[in-house]
Length: 249
Length: 294
Ligand code: SF4
Ligand code: SF4
Image 1 (spheres, rainbow over the protein chains, first blue to last red):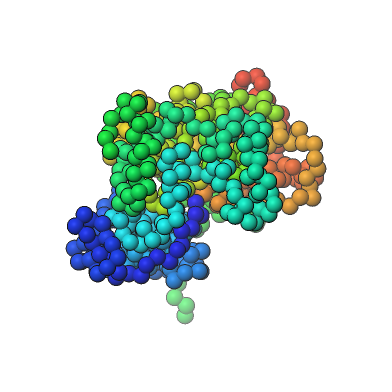
Image 2: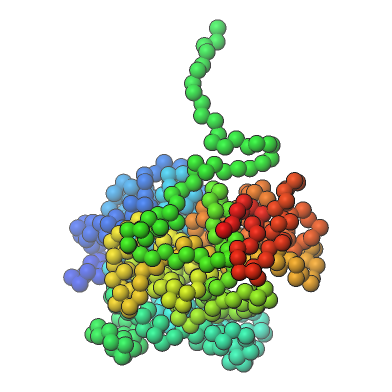
C-alpha cells in the first residue's frame, strides 16, 4: 500500500466551513466546526483499535519513511488525538495527513497504536467534508478514481504511454503501439483487454456500482469533485436501473 | 553487607533451546481470528468457506497452523500485475497447469480497491468491506476457494476480516448491501496469498527444475510484497532461516539451489514432503514444518 500522496497540501488556517458542511480556502472555521470534524474522526468504528495512548517513544518516527522527507511525524498525529487537541488535529487534517505514505511501518508501536490508520480516518474525514487540503492533494488524481470506480480495476494496459513511463525507454512506445496484439497473445483470456486490468463482467460492475451508491462513496466524490461525480453517475445510472436497482441521481 | 535481593523475575516466555535458535512464544500470539470466524458462523452470522482438500498445513508466525489449498482455487487477480506486468499472473496460471492443478480465472472479480483507498481516501470502511465480501461471495458461488495474487489485497482483506469480526454493525451493514444483490455473507476459512501456494508446492516445482539457479541472488521485501499487514498470519518456518523471517521466498529460493541444505540436521520432513502426491485426491504428505495434515 505504499502509495504515497505526499503532496504537502495547503497550510493550516486557510480553510473555512460553508453552510453545506464543506470547508474551503478562506478564514478559520469556528471551533465548533473543528470539534465536529474531530468527533467524526474519533467516532469512526476503527478508532478505538488504533489508539491506546502514547509513550512518546518515537519508534513510529524512527521507522516512518515520510518523517525522513517531510516535516511530518506519526508521533505528533497520535499525540494530538490522544490529547484531544482539536485545533492541532484540524491543522494536521489540513496538511500533515497528505504527507503520510500509508506504508503502516508504524504498526510496530509498542503501545499497539496505528498512527497510519489514524491518518487514514483523518483523510477520509477531510475528503468527506470537502476540506481544501483534500481537493488540493487529490488534484490530478481524478483519472485514477474514475478508472477504479468505473472499471473495477485500477491499472490498465492503456496507461502505458511513453511520456508516462520514460524509464521504460523504447519499450514503452513499442508496447503502447502494439498493445492490442500483445494482450491478445497472452494465454489468460481474462487479460485480452486494454482498458482495464482484466475483463470484468457487466453484472459484477453493476454490483460494484451498487456498493458505491449504498455506502456513501458517491456522495464523498460529489463533495470532492462535482464534475467527476456527474461523469460517474452517468456511467453507473443506466446499468443500475437496467439491473433493477432504481437509485435516482 | 550486600542486601539480598529477592525479586521474582519472569524469564523469557520461551527460552532458546540452544544458542542461535530463535523461537517465538505462542503466548505472544494475537487473538485467533479464524476461530472467531467459526464462532460467528455457529451463531448464524455468516458462512465460513472451508479450505478444499487437498491442502498443505504450514506454520504461521506464532506457531498456528494455516491450510493452503493446492487446487480448486479462485484466482483473485491483481490490478498492478494484470495491468502492467501480466507475465506475473500468467506464470501463476502456467504453474498450476504444469502441476496439473485445477483453477478458476474469474471475470466476476473486481479489484479490492484498497490501493486507491490508501492513496486518496475516497472510500470508507463499509465500502471496502462490501467490495471484499462481494468478491468472496462470488468465489463461494463457484465452489472454488480464493487464492489472492496481490499483496495489497491480501493484507487489506486480512484487515477487513478483523474489522468485520469485531464490529457487528459493520457486518450488518455489509450483509444488507450483499442481500440487495442476492449474495450471502461469506468469509474464507483462510486468506491465502499465491506465494503461500508456491511455498506449499515448492518441492513439486523443484522436481521439474530445468535451469540451475544456484548463482542467482534473489531478494524480496516481504513486508511490501507478501504479508503487507497482519504479519502474524504469514508463514514462518523454523527450517527456513531459523524462522526469523517469512519463509515464502527464502524457502523457494533455497529449494531452487540444490546444493544447499533445505532442512535442519536430523529432520526427515523434506523427504516426506518431496514424496507429496495430490493425484490420489487425498491430502498430501506434510510439508517440512506442518507436523500433520488432514
Ligand atoms: S511508537 Fe506508539 S507509543 Fe511510541 S510515539 Fe509512536 S504512537 Fe506513541
Ligand atoms: S503509515 Fe505510518 S510509518 Fe508509514 S508513512 Fe504513514 S505514519 Fe509513517
